[in-house]
Length: 223
Image 1 (cartoon, rainbow, N blue to C red):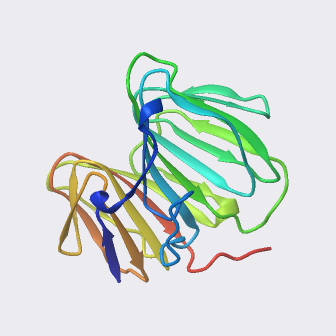
Image 2 (tube, rainbow, N blue to C red):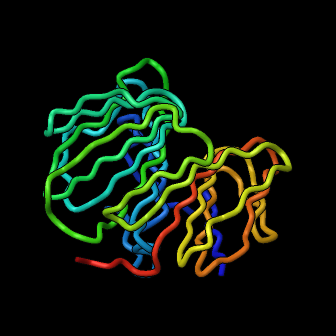
């Protein structure tokens, strides 16, 4: 089964007066939809836009796997475990909050920042936080998030190019840029597809495109 969610259907959050625009794919903060709490391990997929100098002040996380993909601009990250980095387009950032961590996310440049941030529920709770940035991740490179029993695939497609969607109990496709075709439906930037028990599916580029594709188990397994 393929369920398409359009970018225009996302819940608008953030604080525009502070230069923060957020588009939420799932229930988030004050927006509660009991029928849209999660899909597989994925509990948030936020498109964030930060004006120059804007950002999220120090705030806590616990028992959440946080994966961030920068589309344009530069994201400055600082956390209570002593990590301080600048994440740029093509870099993949993962923060495993585990037993608890605090962090700051800001646009310290003079240019707009746009990124996608995805939160996943872990299969086990507690432990020590960890942090990683993969610089310049290549097309098609799978990135494992073991604590969430999930795998992220980056797909960059030219017009007419095809790529397989992983055969998985749950797969989630988020179109970052461009447009693709999936199962007879066109998806454009900001659109997403939630796939249950898919097999033999393909993404076809309708223009130069970039997609984030999650491969996940059917239900979270807590240890």
